[in-house]
Amino acid sequence: MIIENNDSQTSPGGGIALYDVGINTTKLKITENAIIQNNTSCNTVNAGGGIYLSKARLFISGSAKIINNKAGDDDHLTSPGGGIYCGATATDVGSVNIGYFDEGEIDPNCSLTISGNSAKGDGRGIYMKGGTLNIAGRTIQSNTAGGKGSAIYFGSSGSFNVTSRAYIYGGSSKEHDVCLASGKKITLGHIETTPGWNNAAAISLESYSDGAQVFEAAEGVTLKSEITWFGVNPETLGDGTKKDWFLRMDGKIYEKAGSKSSPSAVGDIVFEDGSAEAYSADLSLTNILKNKAKDVIVKIDGGSKIAVSKTRVTYKYWATNSANRDKVAGLVCTPGGSVGSYSFSGTTNGSNCLNVMKAFDSSYSSSKYPAFGAACNDSYYLPSIAELYWMWQNRDTVNNALQKIGTPTTNEVLWSCSQKSDLDYYAWYFDMGTCECGNEKKWLKQCNVRAFRRY
Image (cartoon, rainbow, N blue to C red):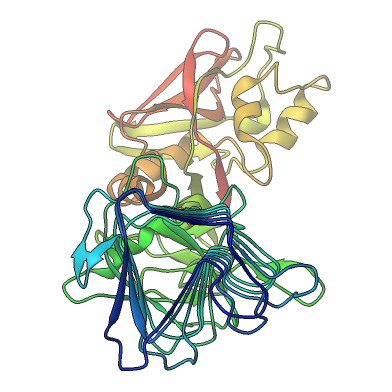
């Protein structure tokens, strides 16, 4: 079946208009290779370029396509619902079921497409003024609108349910969004993820507020197991600037990425905005929060919280053959005691190491001192041998927290910034696997680098 090239200037439903004068008894099933394309409706209130329905049920499955339909034109700038429009009123009892053969019957091999539709008003792909929206199959992508909800606008008093193989492609900058009207939320079932997905949908809100509920779990579903595949778009403020909001595992959005305003304990995960989240074995983070996380606290040192970066740089020399080989007196730090029970004398705080190096060698460059070049930027520094040992002391908590957001330090051999006191050419390194402090000529050994910083 192909329904194409129809033009309705005043009536809803460019391709199909489906009404039910009763109470939700009429069904329309679009399946197999059916195509609804290149249709137009310019009704400025209830458009639906491809399909309009009210008090009826729509089921789309198979490899059906709803593509390149339009709501509105240059003379009708508010027409909503480029692909599908549902609901004459907010309390309409109709439903749109994407990836379903029939009521509650999911198509497990659904490959349908809702794409290339446009709307001058809200809801490029789908506009839900009323009724229930159930999405279990993909793909909704590359629709264009003049208003809110590039993929979907949901303003219904009904429910919005997402499960199975649902995939609403957000675009490279998450511009192809699902927009929820104020107070609306999405109920998540089990999402069958696909390798390479960054998220199953990018969500925008008509009204952002701290603690607003965006997702809830369907019966029998653990929310934190499913929510990781979703993200919330920034809010556009009145002056055009963007304000980030963060989706946490309780399904709510917050102004801060972490539930703690700042880090305060070993194992705390620190985010770009300075907030933190305490490590726990059952902690889960969305993919976006993992990307926003940057450090883990390794030690509380008086008023300072010492943190290690979630990333590492592999195989760097402390210095090159062309570097100054004299003793860096300001970075001397000497381990005492034995393996697993060290004490240290000298410079144990490495946070000033870059300034010390620049004072030591007036021609300092990151290429002459590769380990420093890899670590020292944006308040980060190459840690002292003492600071690496302190991280080892809390290695279980630190590694478990790093595992949540990046790469743990298990068995790494790491350069410190520390100079050996009695051999000018030698610097200290630390073995995270054996807890051994070792030293070597600065240009002969390659070690990994972990940047530290203090809060």
